[in-house]
Length: 119
Image 1 (cartoon, one colour):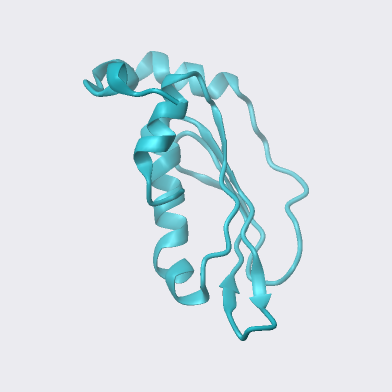
Image 2: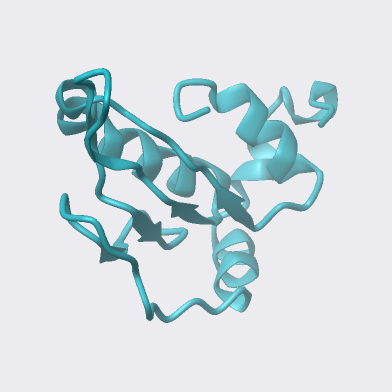
């Protein structure tokens, strides 16, 4: 899902303000793309992103990246669980932040494709 921004844009056009993106990125692609792609989705959709990421070495030898994240609409990482197994227990999430940002920077209205997006 992180690599398919059109789906996220359709959800945002339908009123979504918290995007949940569970994943099992490999260690290599996670290190290269996980934070960047998720921050981009938060920024371009002016939403919070909650992204649980599987971590560890699995029975087939596959290594997953981990780093469960919570990101605000500005793209700031509010919480990062790191590579060890664990969880995020607290992050300040105020859904009013999405609307306040949209009022200051109405990018959804400027997106000429929004009228074509359907969830």
